[in-house]
Amino acid sequence: MIIEVRRAIASLIILMFFSPALLAENADTEQNETPIDVMGKVTNHDYFELPWGKINLPRILYAGGEWYFYSSTNSALESGEFIIEEEAGLVRYDGEPIAFDISITSHLIYVWFSLILTFIITYLAGRKYRRGIGRDTEPKGALLNMFEALFVFIRDQIAKEFIPENKYEKYVPYLYTIFLAITFMNLFGLLPWAAAATANLTVTATLAFITFLVTQISGTKDHWQHVFAFPGVPKWALIILTPVEILGLFTKPFALAIRLFANMLSGKIMIVCILGLIFVFTELFGAAIGVTSGVFWVLLTVALYFLKALVALIQAYVFTLLSGVFIGMAVEEHHLDHDETSVAHAQDVATQHH
Image (cartoon, rainbow, N blue to C red; front, side, top):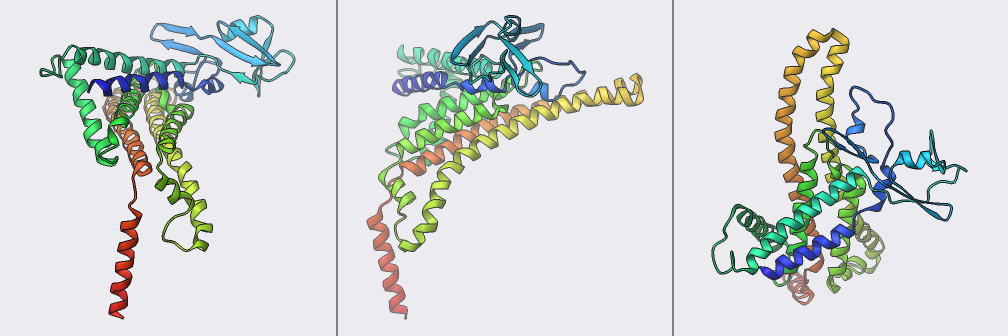
């Protein structure tokens, strides 16, 4: 268990430094305030919102062969080096577009928060295991019991279930890290002022890309043979089958990214839209109707919050489950000799019946 905890911490550190710099490309500057800004609650921002205000985040830009560092977007504009164009957004004063934008953004902050929380929980549990608690004795404390229950669940219900028995152990730390980090990212979206980082396609695509790398690097000879030269089929069929198999390598992580992104984005939009009906009814029918109907909309939102919390856990589980399935398919050893013998035996039986 101690070795697996150390591997989980290593996986977490890799994920932390793999944070998507491209998140900054989706950051926007604050424009006109409206009573209900649906997309403003789910899009990426160049500020970090708190219940009592906003904190402007640093801008790190590369344009025209030079790097620029500013404490905020306003600082970049006040410097005179950058201006905002209606269509292009933030550009250099001479019209030179920004080649690289690796600024800190709101979604990236929540990615870091989730990874840090995952690291803290894993580190504290690992420290107890090193002292013998949970290894030589029964687990003690709520934190260690929750950690062990989660870790054992990921190991037994996902890794051991879908990855060959002699290989599954080394993938448990990665699957555990992915599950817990995505869960935290999803749950942060339940805070009224916060945003779910997984409602950003860049985040989910990065997570799916990491799973893609782990899957392909772990792929056995049999895995690649089934991609480029599927055994047991006529040579002419490979002209059709091989491109389909290659395409399948990329459609799997694509499905991972889109599924998580769409579910978390739609949930946040649904809640914001339902609360926005209070303002819509107030504008259409007056304050009395708006306030009266608001009781129903608020109660419906509370119910949706419980549903969204459940969805947050389910989506983290589905992403981890499919990652385990894809890895298991790649590392599985196919016994071709046995398969060929079975095929030959089937042909002999068919010949005898004829």
